[in-house]
Length: 164
Length: 164
DNA sequence: CAGAAGTTTCAGGTATAACTGAAACATGAG
DNA sequence: CTCATGTTTCAGTTATACCTGAAACTTCTG
Image 1: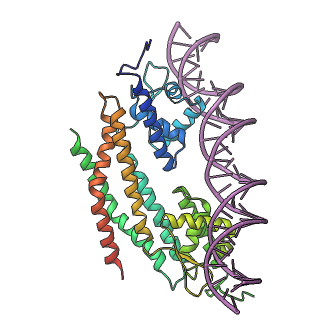
Image 2 (image 1 turned 135 degrees about the vertical axis):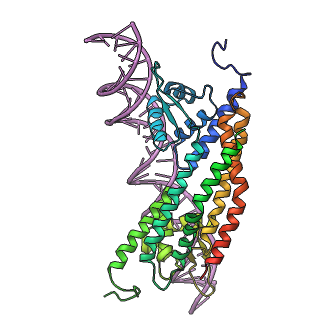
Image 3 (image 1 turned 180 degrees about the vertical axis):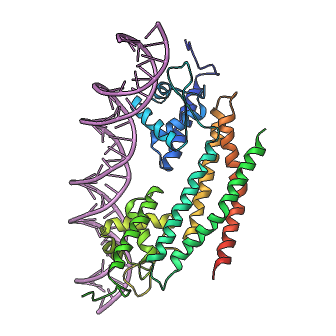
């Protein structure tokens, strides 16, 4: 029995791993992704091998092929997974990008830009005698606009240094 | 005609203001709030006076009393509006907290804590011979854990200085 | 204390996003 | 070219979050 894979230790490994995958999914769901997308991300965090086919994923997570296909496309679009078509392999493989957590920082840039838009548009419509509400938003945005580039730089430096 | 309020300039002010409110709502909707909650936040950004009753809000945004009540409670729970019961006034008033944008930073702390949980739990279930995926998450979290307190300090300093 | 004004609660209706399963489509192997 | 494997698309189902409207409840005022 246990003829293939599961090269690891025992049986209950699976159970805790499933739990972890669900935990990751819950996290990303709060972040606006679908539960299925979160499951995929969680699975790709701990699966072995790290490269998985759509079929692998669908089976491991008990999702339909359609779901997996759709979610993978979306996740690829936002840079949270990478598709790799190996020559000589029928099926494409999917895995987390090495620099996924760096890529996610780009969403911060978008957030800041979005707030900038709100601040500017708000100035035009706010009661002229009351600049305070828009003003405090504007200040917060200004802070991040000036700090963020340097912060990003520090992150990259930190990650580089930390490589052991 | 135009018997009360609308002490401002002209008629088309309203139209652009409505648009702005919707814009704000769209922003917050992406952030996980409901559309109605976003509308309320948008309205409170530009309404005059800044303090509004539930009835004011419901009328301005064409929402039911029930909706407004529910959303205000939720928004108050996460610190994005403040309720003020003025003595001698029947109705409570609601407005944006002065330091709303500072309060929002607390959600960042929660995000970091959430990722720390994932990193630690992940270490326990990841294939032992492959610490890389969890490791890169761990590094990112470590960065923020060490940087965030100082960043918060700088924000507060910046906002204080910027007061004109 | 009685009634009005303000607020909350909640059952029901509605809209919508997510997932499935099957069919269409694409791609590589023989 | 033909078949098998892999992937995408999409109509239909299901689940769920949102909003409404009305009734219950609370809190002020006269």
